[in-house]
Image 1 (spheres, rainbow, N blue to C red):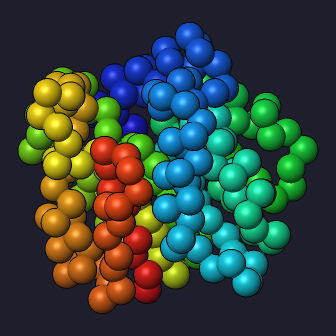
Image 2 (image 1 turned 45 degrees about the vertical axis):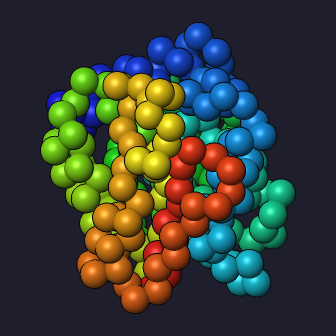
Image 3 (image 1 turned 120 degrees about the vertical axis):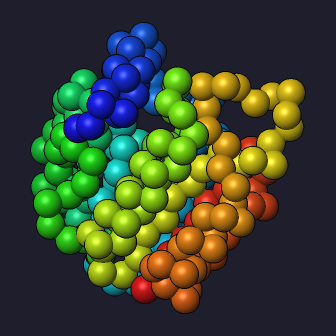
Length: 205
């Protein structure tokens, strides 16, 4: 893990220790918004066939709960930069043969799909150009690590200025849509219509 992500890992470890395995433990306000964003991200998945999916920045494994409520056959790999998150997720989902949790920023083997929810939001004191580079490198890794597609979300630069926080990163949705369209696939969808101060991008190969 590079130096840029070390304070981020500690930030989320602290959140987990304070709030436990619930939405506030991964810095979300509540379960309603969490489920809504999962529904957008999972639009990239194939509903009718078995698939494998990597959850990049899995936290305590909340996406796995959502997937189990919506899909019948899949294999899930949760990846997180926080040791505490990986341990909490593995304990919470112990005994599930279709799920694996590992520490890191990417999986070792290709999966059909990858999903990243919220991993680009908290930049702390990192400079925006360094954070832009991190986002670009992460998307490249998600592209290389998948055979069918990937999805991610970001806080939007269209957020109300008086509600923006300096430790968070607000991305330009048009810029990232253009990047994905030019670099990864002709089939790219930008979702910015679901009532949260964020957007979701789906990349289908």
